[in-house]
Amino acid sequence: MIKLRSKRFCRSSSKLGSGNKLAAPAEKDSRSFGEIKWELRPGGMLVQKREINQNAGEGIITVRVSTVSQWHDISIEATSTFGELKMILSLATSLEPREQRLLFKGKERDDEEYLHMVGVRDKDKVLLLEDPAIKEKKKLLGLAGNTPCRTISV
Image 1 (cartoon, rainbow, N blue to C red):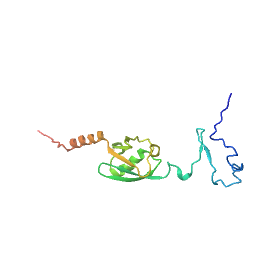
Image 2 (cartoon, helix red, strand yellow):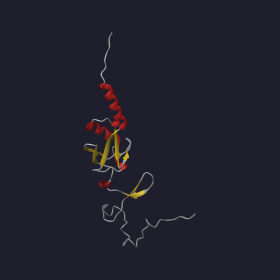
Image 3 (cartoon, helix red, strand yellow):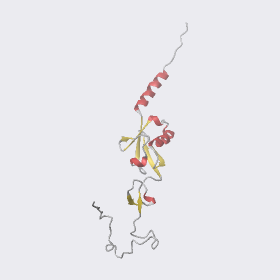
Image 4 (cartoon, rainbow, N blue to C red):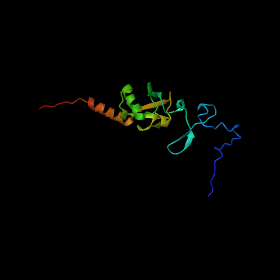
């Protein structure tokens, strides 16, 4: 059986100058220049550790939600779902969440999709449309409700 080694992760001490640069962390400050911190992901992949300020899915973002006639700036956590965004919009637009259709990057998004997973970032625009089937139903119920009812007695 042959074992293959990847040369991308192998460093010889001659390329590092003095061989003491990869010494134990107790000897040097862990924030020293040139030191790479590694972390093991749950899937077993070894990756370079991210800094706290570089995490994409954390914090509060402002999303501009545009309707046909107006727009709303909504502050929401980046890890929220489109369903949660619909709940907040129902307070601002008086449309029930089931009556709303949210489009981002030209695609309608489901209520279970997360904002940060789809790529919504701070100051991004989301389009809000009223569901056409429910709009038609409202028209029909509105017309039926306005017809006068007469009682005929003999």
